[in-house]
Length: 471
Image 1 (cartoon, rainbow, N blue to C red):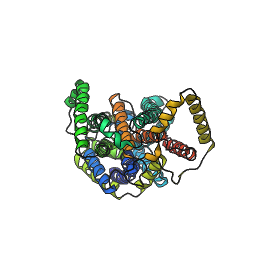
Image 2: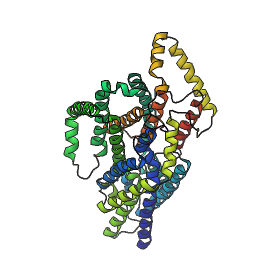
Image 3: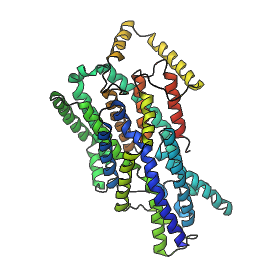
Image 4: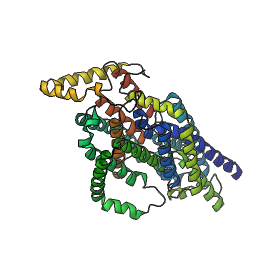
């Protein structure tokens, strides 16, 4: 009997490799879409930034797999055999589901997929247990509060990211205009200081919090000196940005490079559980079973209530696989094409059709816009329109989807919002935040013209609808 479960755990680890490939293909849009859309660097250079971030984040992660161990179900009520059936169902479903979304070019959340796959499989096994034992209740077997918090995080993060992306990009464009290069000498210090501070703060509290060399004293130091760190970083980056601009360095490219690295670092260090958490939990369960000499059908897995670090050599292998997936995967480019196409400043081939909901939203937004502008002075409206003269747009390359300014704002806001959510212990998805910030900033930049708005909104609704498919 034990030999069967040894083979099953080996199968789970093999599925983890496939899951890493399809998962990285999906999540590549999180940290590459802004840099790819703006053509800030050659694609190979971007892959290098992202690969370094992914490898560092994976290799130095401490591999805490608490969500897979006891975040959704209550392991003290399940036997080893029951949990192994849950893990097998989760891994098979995850590989198929993520590969399906990648084939369609639709970005989805690996976090939500994993959480709700665990929830669905756990509920199925729990119902079987309850049917055979009237003393058990579903609320005892399932951690329902965790699932509800993730659902609330979905709605809140989508709304906040889109709204903040729209407002901040609108203000940035009012200040810099589409011909932003002539205004950089006046505002690059403030903009560079804010952007780089948010990105490096994101690395400090989100990218490094799960690293093996970071102890509890690090988190305490950050908490005790948070304001001073922010002010110090802003002052330093304010000066550095002016110096770099004075010597001819494109500060916006620096922001995009560090932003891409930071999101890749955090993705690998924190979302690693989405790909290998379940297989490593299965391996840990098997090790405890064999050490205690228990029977798979009667051995209760209460030991999973305790946190355990992942084995460093398995994390190293995971890092290598993720880097290879990032470099070799072709499906990641399909997902990127969808995200970049929906945010493109220029008229391009639309990937989605139109539906009545999108048309109604366009008509409603126009009515609201007319109602607001009718109460504003005509001189103010003309002055604002001049700031949004898209004919003066300055693209890094002719075929770029948008300019470096919008790419920098996207990365700055994504880093800031995810860091804020992490510090407040709110459940967030990097996919949700980065995608919706990009959609909000494209709306503020008037990238959604009268002709393309209905198609873009249909695309956004289609992507958002796909996020709820795992539920």
